[in-house]
Image (tube, rainbow, N blue to C red):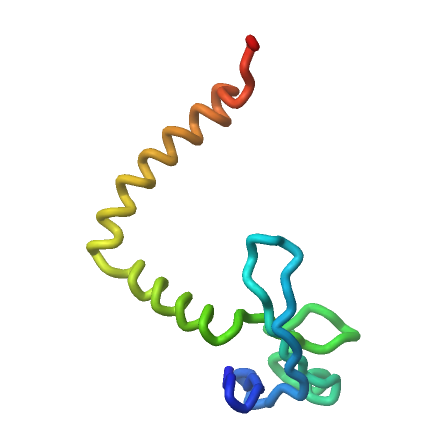
Length: 114
């Protein structure tokens, strides 16, 4: 993704022909989305088409967050690979597993009395 030139290059070397957005997403809590589009002439003859899209008629579109959110996402994902983060998350994972067991396994979301 090249945010300055407003284009995306696919693994086969094709450069997107359209860059639209950022659009607000359908969910109020989700991030806005930028959409890059490739043309039919780029996608139809591509030998890697089956790995890219399952549509026979339409072309490939790629959706991704704006630059600031993308860099934040990359930084946080890298942080999640550190041993310190995994140690901290192990505690949360155990607590969430216990809460999930009560809520879904024992019907604790439903109260029998008012």
